[in-house]
Length: 160
Image (cartoon, rainbow, N blue to C red; front, side, top):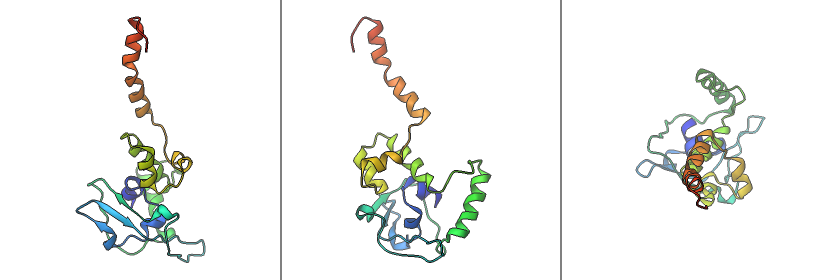
């Protein structure tokens, strides 16, 4: 779930409704057709994804795989998430949902277009997409290195 939350940009309620028929191992893709958020009273509400664009096919890196089992419950998953988060040294305030931010930021760093990122993460507006991606130090360094030719040209008296 962690890999799919980050690298396929799926919401927890979308992950809850994935079934074997949703997974195409040959294409490394997942068909999202339903979502199943769990209400605070423990009741599941299964239906369409959050937005109209939510019914989509999400492509994953080939190293992602999903083991099958019973549908997760928020309470059980929460305990397992906190334990795993502590084990790898993540901050206590890092939520599972924050993996969408991680995945969107990694996808953006590949040079993806805004529309591609919006489709991948089921975002209906540019504003929503920008909330889910962040600038990283690594990417800032890459951008700075990309300005080297302009700096060298200006030192030689050229204009840029």
